[in-house]
Image 1: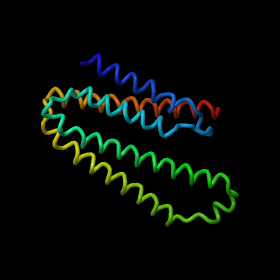
Image 2: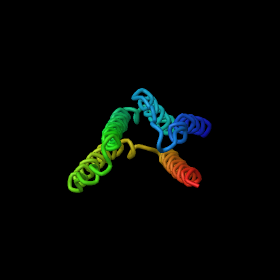
Image 3: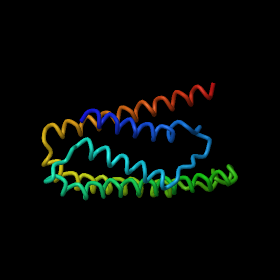
Image 4: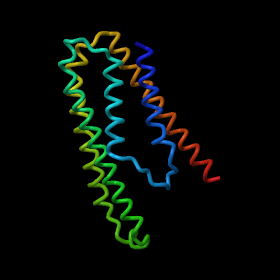
Length: 170
């Protein structure tokens, strides 16, 4: 089991790390929707493989998978919209951008994004709840390990990226 989990996590981070490190902050990243869908598929498969669901637990999995995929699609949509706004701002005159900025509009957009993220997390929690109640202590432990491992890797990646950006500025 640990071998499956380790292999899956390794595959995830080998696939995801080029997305995080390959481009400098000023370069455009060319990630297709298919790439993001593949990454989501891998994440779903890793979680499912780590849990090793019983046949009785399998009936709860489709709702969890759907919530994971919906949250991922919504995130991708938000990223695309933010990239479009940034491209428009880059093409505009910087003086006009500063002169025409609207902090109220910014706050409303931010609130909309946070509300959508909150809704997606509520749906994810609602989907996980019935399955989580049926998990054995060992399955819960594997789920916690997976969460801690992923969070640690994300933190390390962010720290490495910040360090490399600092080095590039010198």
